[in-house]
Amino acid sequence: MTGVFVVGSINQDFVLKVERRPEPGETVTGAELALYPGGKGANQAIAAARLGAEVAMLGRVGEDSFGKELVENLRDNGVETGRVETVSDAPTGSAFITVTPDGENAIVVSPGANRRFGPDEVATASEDLERARVLVAQLEVEVEAVETAARIVTGNGGRFVLNLAPSHEVPGELLRLSDPLVVNEHEAAFLLGEDARDPEESAGKLLDLGPPSAIVTLGAAGAILATGESSRHFPAPEVQVVDTTGAGDAFMGALAAKLAEGALLEEAVPYSVIAGAVAVTREGAQGSLPTPEDVEKLSSERS
Ligand code: RIB
Image (cartoon, rainbow, N blue to C red; front, side, top):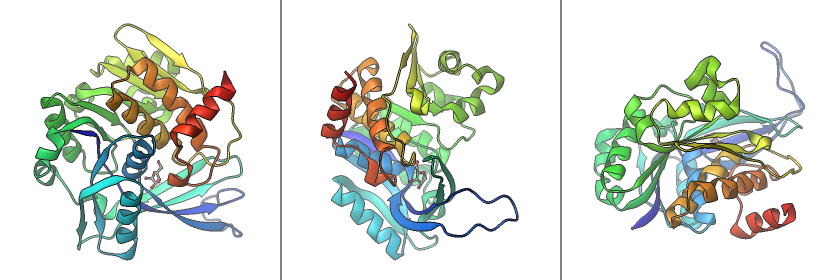
């Protein structure tokens, strides 16, 4: 049985460290450029693998040098890539990221090959999906592909975890299958509108959309977990923020790894909050993903 199966994006990240972002029509110069492997899917797969889970991924890259290197990178990080295919009609996905001195990021994604698989291609992976304990997906790939994978996994006793990132309309069935549905504050507002004003309450309100459990991540303030029984806040430790890119992916990977081990959400969420906090102390998405020792160290410093 594969512990964690990730259906998601694989991107080449182009990261610009800028003093400030340009206004429309303005040019700013002096930015430092760095290239990192990224993509929410790949980041979450590697995050889970680095924390000890057995992980396989389904995704697409283009027939270019970025694609080749990104797949090698997944493999080098312990992710099984037999279901990652190369397509000739689209380039590898790319993400253009600006990071300001306060560590905040802003991202524009060109999906490219990430959008080159749908329900039929997912169905060809059904034998692998049937063996998944936890399926993790985000929305940088086609929603129909995610839906098909979620039905296969949950229909075979596995658990589906949806990270509704970036915000996108999804069918009600997908929300109902998500256990948990994980969103940040922007994504909560996308789903709930005015009702998302109070994060503590918004986690509970997400349950009205159908998922048995929901998590709202709050950055430096930690995360709120809502289940049928209760809503609970798990605060984050105070850390020196360098780059917030990939912090949400560190959280998701940690959550998937813990749930695949059989942990309860009440145990998995505080662990994932710490994993996310470690990630913001370092540059880049994947370079910042923690090991179990990193999580352990920050947790013991906190207590
Ligand atoms: O969550 C961070 C990721 O979002 C980046 O790695 C980028 O590729 C975008 O997908």
